[in-house]
Image 1: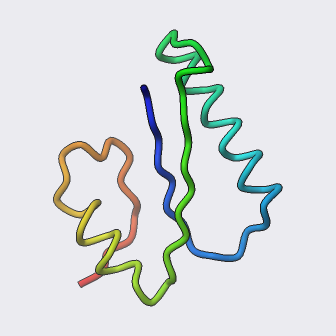
Image 2: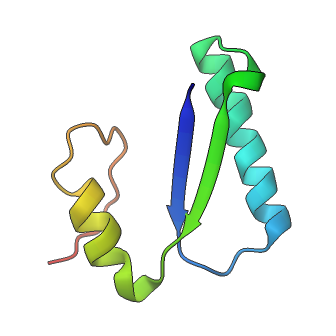
Image 3: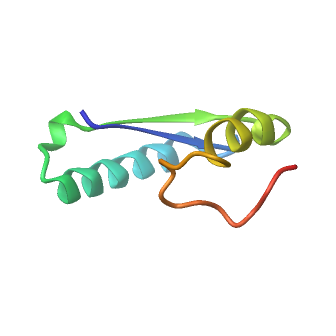
Length: 75
């Protein structure tokens, strides 16, 4: 614990994803005062064609647990 899942459009190389995961893990450990060895970060690629249904509408739009919402909308 904790586990963070980042969903994004495909196209970033492995180095970028590894660097992002490391920075997220470091920040999470620091903010939560947790041992870095307890933090995990997953990156899941979702195509732009599926983003609206699978991510925005299913996980973001009406979810009160999303603390940082995007400034876009999918109808």
